[in-house]
Image (cartoon, rainbow, N blue to C red):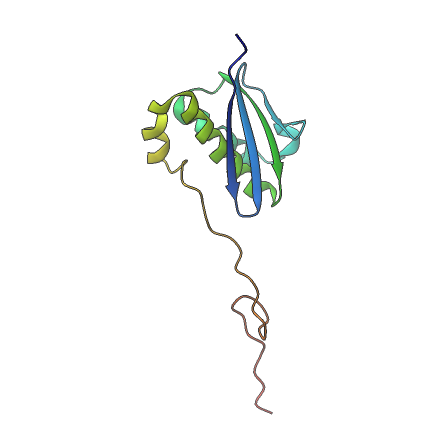
Length: 130
């Protein structure tokens, strides 16, 4: 019997990630790099691990991620959503804890588009009376 793998997709702003969880020792790989090298900031590493810490499954899975689009923060939050969804496939009983802490909600906020005749999405060009 092959090792079981759990797959889920996470999105945030323009970032899209595919997350693969395999039973293992807790190794994080993102786009072929170690997570510490990919996400340089400790805050982003904390975001990555938060779903595992919450469900007390920190060193039970190896995580392999392909991330594209957006910035590092958006990608980190997309990975967190993907991990949370994959953990549900592993154990549906974790749903209550993850949902209560907002880890299963897709943050739909994206940048508003620039409108024609304006400087930005909402900013207008400065009005000159003369």
